[in-house]
Length: 394
Ligand code: AMP
Image (tube, rainbow, N blue to C red; front, side, top):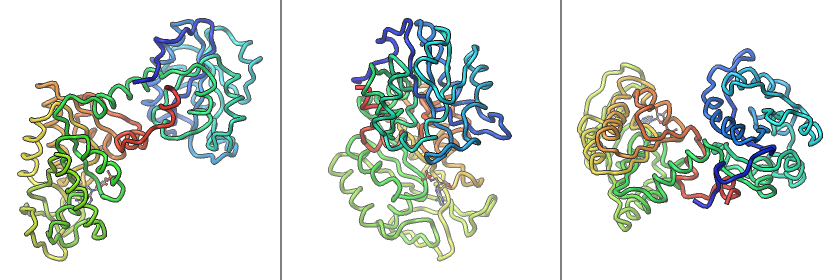
């Protein structure tokens, strides 16, 4: 743990500098998906309930240190007001004097922190300036916690600091999944490539009891054992690495589960005809055949493995889930995990990249214990890395 929450802070009469992630999708000046805004509303409400005045800091888009009018935060004001149920005052160039002239319960939104190169450089001068704008620092942007920027870590060292409600929920869920999990703990790791998830796999096999590998990644592991998988997505240069991960897992007592069968097609296209073929070291596919999804036997293995677990981490799809029917295994396995969550209190924590989209497609997004929308920060946590934005709260 080691980090404080809003409950530990005296906020009465204080300006609470609050780093949030409101990097929402917009079209024609309107917010098209307000999820990120709704998720910070409890933090804003709790700060105000404790007599504080939130001064919101956030980035938007990638202005690369320049003032880019299209990436101003000002157009977000109506959506913020709707989510918070109170007025929000936007300020382009704040000063402490200006802030002190605002009502004691004001919600203030400061212009895009990335309009200066000092933000991403974690320039101490910017951190010093930001620290003058508040009495307390609250970080509610877990999704930006893997970046050491002036508004995420620099300022956190200069003011009494705590986690906001969303950050608190993320950290509690991630600690419950990996730091102090209810055992046995397992992970589904799917997706395209081993190369992008090397650190993740290496860290997980040391910490968990069962590793379920799926998607294109599983092809690389099967090929490393001798399978010939035709035109399947796989990384031939990573066979040694895959074998090393399997050795590491064996030494650490982590069971690795690879798909025992797959849906195999000659075309990467929605509705393409397929055969279900057993997958093992002896599999020999034609040159134009591709494993695009796990098969029914593999899904049954995954469901059986899930039934032995108390905690499940999920990252990545088990097949090319964007093109039906090759979403079948991802959807079925996700439903199995959701059912076990409801029936046996399995703790299910998912996140990273395409995972949220895949679980939405399976219709189980509300049935998992926790789904992180944090992407990169979720993966870095699962890779065992220290997140500077979290470390700075300690
Ligand atoms: P990632 O971003 O690494 O989580 O990978 C997700 C992508 O991997 C999705 O676009 C999937 O369509 C793709 N994928 C998963 N399994 C396969 C497969 N067997 N063949 C081709 N693409 C796959």
